[in-house]
Image 1 (cartoon, rainbow, N blue to C red):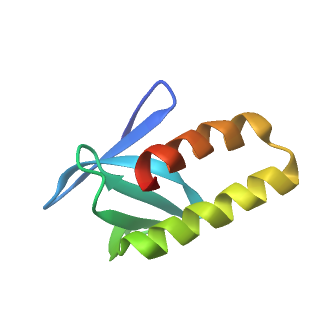
Image 2: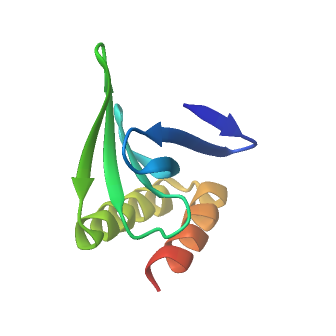
Length: 92
């Protein structure tokens, strides 16, 4: 896993470079394929390392919408604006 500025990328064994969309839970993050942004992965970090779970576009959208709601409720407007922009580029 590596970061450039505020962007985070990881290398998937089959699909290559993945781009981090957002944190979902304490040990889970939502990633998508870097170029097409059509395949989505829920990446879980534990003591054994990274675990990739392929998820559908609808589930990825719901996870992102939930994260946006939580950011709006907690008043994290800068992170909300950044993530909302990602949401629009990815799902609209």
